Image (cartoon, rainbow, N blue to C red; front, side, top):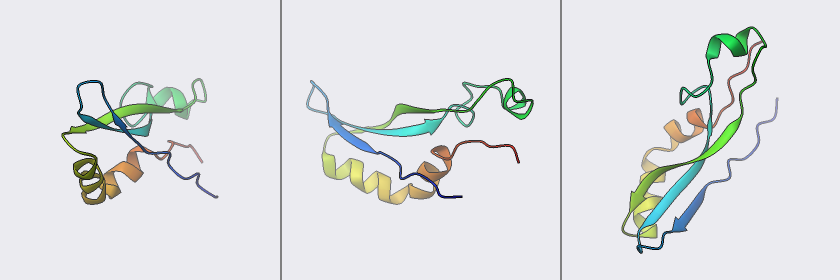
Length: 81
């Protein structure tokens, strides 16, 4: 199975702070019930969520580098074999 590249965005807010937004699995953040996905009554989907806010773009990139494993896991859809 080929995974899609995560579309990570670093956005400057109106208050001059920087926000790191990543696509997260709705099951992994608790928005969709895992049991319903297993029963195939619901589907998992990616949702862009702000995960980190900093004073600079560099700080957001640094945080992303340090937490890359967590970001990849949150961005992986929950699938039932």
